[in-house]
Length: 219
Image 1 (tube, one colour):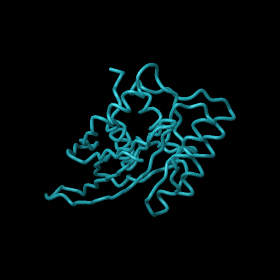
Image 2: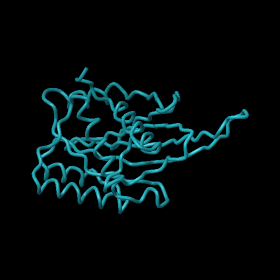
Image 3: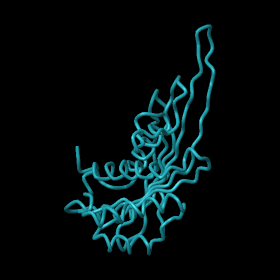
């Protein structure tokens, strides 16, 4: 059984898209509030997939960047800590993230629970890039140029071990007057803050985490 929170686009500012989201039923909210009680729960982000076609979204480094951003965002709520890992666990996670991105295959709830138990987690999380679009508009005036808007929609799945999967959707937007908007690899890494698609993807992830019905313990 999957419970879904939809996060809808509502307001656009110069670099970041801001969004609002619907609330879950009281019963659904109370279930996850109960799970989050007490000490922070151990979590591992086990991958990301993409529904976007095109070579610019094929690089597996994108999945690792998404996983890192999602890990930090979940921990920043104060409800989670990353599971303690050694070199063996790190290698397992790296392989899972790579294969999850390449195969574009969703985890079943049984698979997610099995991975959580194997890693010693209370919960696992993963993301899916649902849509990506660009719009280039030419401004009016003798010295006006063109403005490009990038919009990315991301789904976040949070799976507490033995419980239902919780989903939320976030939308991120970025706007620029320059042409540098796609992911770029620099020294074997992709820096999400360096391009508009990276900025939009990061904001979509943050908005999706914000939409999850979990308490914010950090202020």
